[in-house]
Amino acid sequence: MKLLIFGSAGGTGRQLVEQALAQGHAVMAFTRDPAKLDIKHANLKVVQGDVMDFTSVEKAVQGQDAVLSAIGAGGKRSTIRTDGTRQIVRAMEKAGVRRFISQSTLGVGDSRGHLTFFLKYIIVPIMLRHAFVDHEGQENCIKQSRLDWTIVRPAAFTDGERTGVYRHGFPVTDKTLKLKISRADVADFMLKQLMDDTYLHQTPGVSY
Image (cartoon, one colour):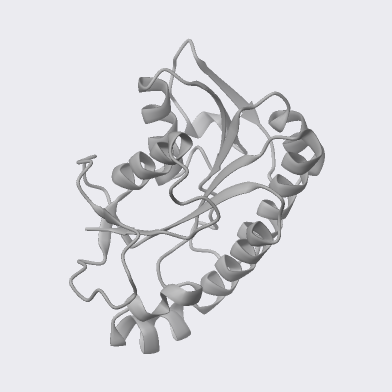
């Protein structure tokens, strides 16, 4: 497939690029700083652009089969997930590219029940409040679109290897989760959605 990946220089984004290339896809990696993505491959095209700039997003979306997004704020207080996703959705709808797979985070919306007491009442409200508001806005933008979307909600990230062994689509009543997962396995799950409509218009969590 011809894939466009936003946030390609980040932790999950880089994994998406590497794994997609290994699977034989043609990848366009969209990033503000191409120097951060030191991957060389015959099927990779690195495009410099700002997800907040509709013109550059629109140009990149043209001719793609699917779009994956792992955009984030890098720990900064920002609305880039909401505003950047709005540009992506707008460009996709205009170009007629329908399949969109976006990374969010476990704990957003109806998955809040998965969080531990400490996360739910201390960490998120005090340290991650703005990030979660941004994720909420991002998810709402996607859900209101006309796209064939899947929102993937990973647990806390680790830098472990891709195992392919993890849990997904679990109910909020499941209290046996480890609430962590490697970025490599998140990318693995996101790419699997390209060939699977099980979670079409759904928000599956993914965790060990």
